Every structure is written in C-alpha cells, then in structure tokens.
Image (cartoon, rainbow, N blue to C red; front, side):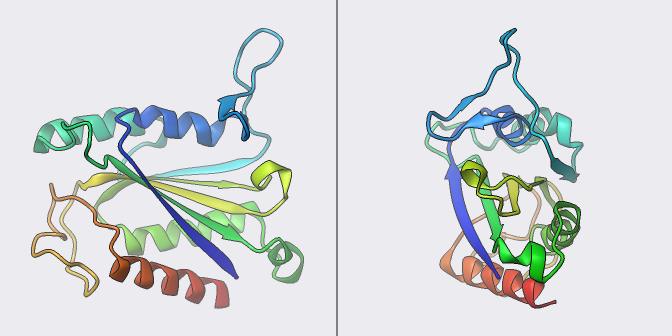
Length: 186
C-alpha cells in the first residue's frame, strides 16, 4: 500500500523542485549536499520523466505558460503542487517493486490524473532519511497547458480547460487516493 502527501507551493522558482529531486539534500537542513569542490551531488538512483514538457526545462516551460495565460503573477498564488506517493518498504520484497516499476506505474497514473498539465515525475529508491522506501514525486504547474475531459471531481466549470488552475480539493484528493490504492492493488 502507499501513502499520498500533498504540498502546495507559492514559490515561483520551478527550478528548485527539479534540483531537489535530482540532487542529494540534507533533509534536516533542507540544503543540497556538496562535494569537496562545492558542487552538488547527483542522487544515486532516480527515474525522471516529464509530462507535457521536457523534464530538464520544466522551469522555463512553466514560466512561459504562466506568461501566456497571465497567471501566477501574485506572490500569494499557488504556483505548483507537489504530490508524493510513498510505497510501503515491504512492497520491494513482497511485490517485487523496483524504482523503475514504481516510475512506470506512477507515470501512467499521472497521465490519467493530470492530463493537460506540465508535470515532473521522479521516483527515488533511497527513502526519506535513507529509510529505503520507494517513493515518487509528482510536481505540476498549477496552470493547465491543454484542455482535457471534464471529470466528476472538478469543482469549477472551467477546471478542465487550458489556462485554468488546478484545485486540490477534498473531492480531488479522495479521488486521487482511491486511484493510488487501485494502482497498489494491481
């Protein structure tokens, strides 16, 4: 089974998300770990994909879309949503879960849950503070790039249209959690 966590971010630094996801960080201090020359150190193992954007240009793509729709200009607006799916450490031995398999499962889920959004999907195998649990980070721009089909969990009339913002409502989170549980059962 897995646990779903949501973090809404008002930071306009979309590049910080990518840096956190691909470089080692001191989880206590929330700072990058540097080598003896002062360079950031890549994580030992991670899997990276982008949805509706190239992952290494996620920041520029999000900023361009925000300018195009004149969104996320106010510092108090939510600019991105960060969802974390943490798998049970036992899933590795009991279900043969690997980082590669978790990435494929979560990428498929992201395509279903977040159609039309720019997203980073990154799976780590090290766990928080080296706990060893496999977990996947999903970071989306709050503005939808492409229109998608309307879903029952959408609360506003235009939530499915390009240029409108994602709302992480209770109804949406309930739907997302159920999708995560269904994925785990499969």
